[in-house]
Amino acid sequence: MDSTQKTTLLRLPLTHWISIGIYLALTVLFVFFYKGFMGNTQSAAAWLESAWTPETDYEHGWMIPLLCIYMMCRAAKKLETAPVQGSLKGLWITLVGGLFCILAARSQQPRVVIGAVPFLLSGAVWCYWGRKAALTCAFPLFFLWMAIPLPGLQQATTSLQSLTAHGAHAVASLCGVETILAGSKIAAANGTWDSFDIVGGCSGIRSLMALLMISIVWAYLADTLALWKRFLLAVSAIPLAIIGNIFRISSICLFAEYVDPTFAGKTWHDWSGLLFFFPATLIGLALLHGLLAGELPFIRKRKTVTRKHNATADEAPADEKGDRA
Image (cartoon, rainbow, N blue to C red; front, side, top):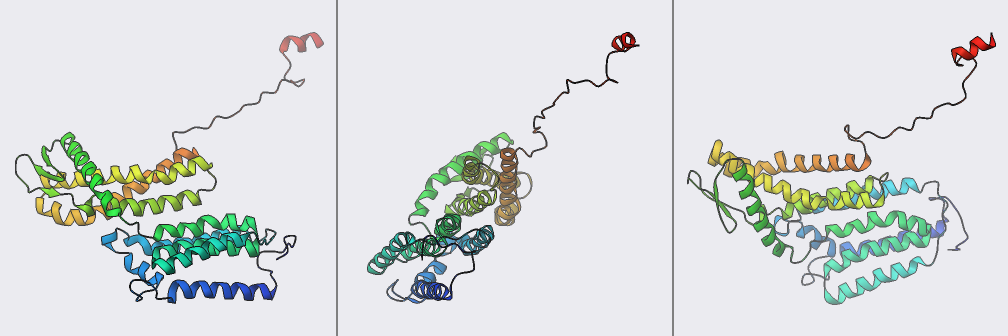
């Protein structure tokens, strides 16, 4: 496409739309229908869907493509009336995506195919709609990377288990519940309830990944904030998830001590994430957003008061009026 050509977002020649359709069809065929992975039994998309399981701590994975589509629609609205300058420079990005696809086919790694999709799509956007459109759509497209389960993520749960166990032990002690900590197990010092073992699922890694997804989208949508504030809002999911999970485990100990051990170990354990963890962490995100934006009730913005120095005749001092009289 000629780099000097300017059109609106949707008004492209028919030949360009045909080439876009062919390009997208080839991308879809390779991602969804090429069964060259997992012993030539699965496509990359089928593998990705099968990897969104509790064992990989990616049960929230199905939400990420939907969020990508939503953010892409939001980005497209910003470009509806923007001039378009297609450029062949976008082919370099497309070439990177193509190399990823070749590498994936040779190594039979479906992760690499999913990782290539943002390059393929953003390169096409640059070619047909220009650099500005590609930059606007880059974040929604590369957000798809969050749907790829990280290899070795389960190994990170060991440190989180220890951190959660020590934190819950300290919080329970502050609330008057004496506990004994043995590794990742918390038990009552008086033996009134059995020990709770903080296994990998209770370490908070699953909640951390889900909350990180939410905070990143939240930061993207908060486009009125400065860039460093949006980054801070995105990474705040890490401490919020850790602190929230510590208090969740502590609440189980408190229920076991003061209410009923069976209720605490079963009912409250199963429902505390939905009823306690996510509401508390989302409120924390909202408060942080309000703090960064200066919208909290206790934050008062300074008002600049301009005083008028030119007094009118009616505002003149009384002695001056008397002199004039």
